[in-house]
Length: 378
Image (cartoon, rainbow, N blue to C red; front, side):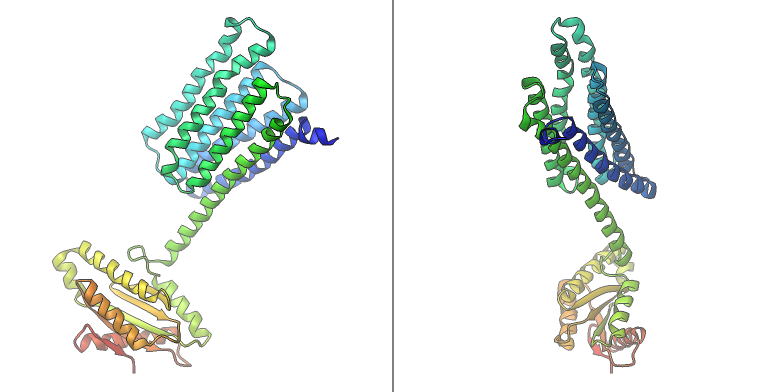
């Protein structure tokens, strides 16, 4: 083995294909696991496309090692490349969108069009009497140029419908250069131009690495979304009761000086009965936003149940009476409702449940003594 073989020869091509097979195998495992867990069409399309990509590169490895190079094997490799490219892009689209009949017609139409273009492969030998090499090149030119059509269609139709647009467009740009390098090297230099040969081996690795990162980051997005949905309230996007209670327990367990603010929207049932549940939901979102904004720099806010919202203030420099009054005042000024608010301070020996209960009792006294006021637990 010498440096020339490692950079330009069959060994370089074998090494490149082997690396791609490993990357594709990792993507396949991730995609298959997601499909088995979530049964989403995007993962099924991605999994199938990765199987085809794997077959394509394994076949290419076998043909390189065995020295087989015929018109039929070249056609098979090219069709596998086109079909897997279409399915991968369909899978990426489906990772972020539901697929209706229009999208299926688009993607499967691209495959059918590829089969139509491939007719040229079989008709060229009967139409052109050139050398064997010239006939081989002409047989594949239709499908090779069709790949550019696919790249541009995907580049201009898919990015606006998915996340990670920049990474996706980078991958398509790299694929464009892969195809350009391949055509220039094959049709102008007979696959012997050294720099183009290096690019032809390196660029596919970059392309599949970008696809791997796109799929991996989508998994991270999904995990984050699942985690967020498990700890937040679906309507207000505040932390849910369980998460809030656990966080209070953590601080109380470490004997840290925290405050609990407990609020209840005044006359909320009457609002629901007279103006409808949609108005009630809108008010809950408005009050929740105020709670979240006020707690952002000094603690966390949660929805404790119904129209009850809570804040744990962890910053010891906060003047709690002023903080609670500011929350009450903003609710009165910025919404169509008012709120009764109570708060309590942690003292040694209190449990998280007792601390929250004290704030609740203070809120209850505020409600019983006229509403729309702040009461400190005493």
